[in-house]
Amino acid sequence: MKLPILILAVILCLFTRCAGIKGSYNEDIISFSEKQNILIFNVDIFNGKDSVLIKNQDVYIADGRIQQIVPAQNIKPKDAIPKKIDASKRINGTGKVIMPGLIDSHVHLASSGSPPWQAVRPNVEYNLRAYLYAGITTVYELAGLSGKTHKLKGKINDGKIVGPNIYNAHLPITVKGGHPIPMAKLGAPFPLKNLVDILVPTIAEEEEAVPLIKKYTKNNIDYIKMVCDQLPSGIPEMQPNLLKALVKEAHRLGYKVFVHIGSSENAINAIKAGADVLAHGIYRSSLSDNDAKFIAQSKVPIIYTISGFENAFQFSQGKFIASKWDSLLLPKEILETVSQSQGAKINKVDLMNRFTEDIRKSRPFWKENIAKLRKHGARIVVGTDSTLPGTYPGSSYFQEIKLLREYGLSNLEILRGATSYNAQLFLNDPDFGTIEEGKRADLLLLSANPLIQLEAIENPEKIIAGGRIIERNN
Ligand SMILES: [Zn+2]
Image 1: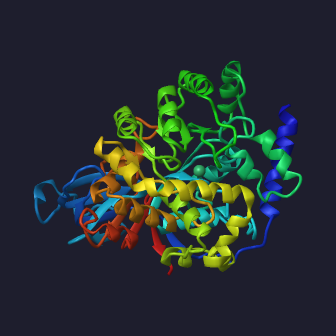
Image 2: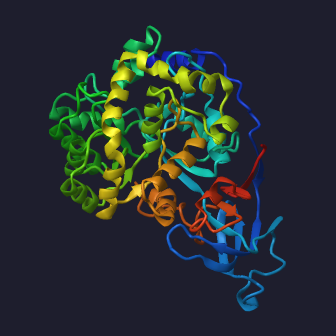
Image 3: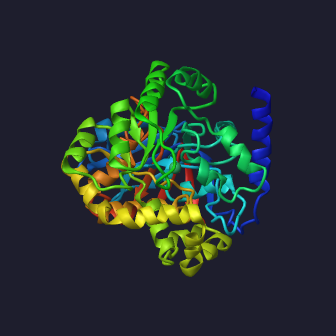
């Protein structure tokens, strides 16, 4: 059975690579240096965790890591980094702030985000550059072909291409006919439609959990993704006993589990089954105060991905408007086909129309749902679900943050959710997500304190990823 699946996967890759028109991507969106020894002197630090800045520090970067953080030379010369230190780049941080690079904890790399009515070929290496452009230095791929992603990670590690630090799952485990199968088939040309059923792993009986997880972990993965949702409502959904059996086996083998959920019932079932992370917020139902309390007290982090759902709503109204960052980062072949009345074509695609109908009904509850979760102390982290129509690499992150703020999260909550909290979703001791000695040199140099002016993260003066300096070219 193994060989035919491999052949099918190759055909699928070939098809996705050839399907659609070529987008006019601005390939030179960023330029970047080799890894450098960098000294940032007299800078204030938001370390990703604390509500106050650590003032006037010298930060020394070498071999792609933060080697030393000490009070600045002009403040405390005795402890200072020696003046003769080998730093090819010296950056005056006076009056500026560094913070950890941003983390997008819900992405799909191998997509262009074009709508079904106008396929544009995916440009995966461009997507990676777009994340860096936005200051996103780590992404979690929550479903994709793990073999392809593994190759991409290898190319980044070998310095052949630039991109954020990538962690990944394989295609998500679902039930026959469950999400994402119907959506993945949508717009897929023959014979791709039939391949989707074969490639996406499904479970029907509890006894299948052990061999299924064993097979899943043979892929190059960092964690496991499962689906417990109806997207759109009415399609088959994973039952709690199956979810429980899958999570139990995943944990036995030492893997954390991200569960895509939609309703509050899905969220509660996922948590009771032992889920480690909820891969969406509660977007498909209203949330009672009691359920919010249960979810929050479980301490299971929630990657809210509100922008993807908001964009689907805007499409259905024929009101999607590309943001400033979308316009800078996306080819016109994509943006023109989704903007305003063009985007309303979503209503003519039956499956998508049913999905946006669900959203139109549930959207009035979204703000209240988050408020209830916050009230009980839920841990909300920042992810976008890019790349989807309307929700694109890099640009959607700024939209997500704006929406979370509109929904009442404080700047500190958002910044922790974008950095230190996001880094702890599946790793106990991540080497990124905070500004500390020994961590990866993934950081943003800002002209203002993001705890007060959150928008400062949209225009960093410098982006440093693994010790490379990234410059925007527009
Ligand atoms: Zn997703």
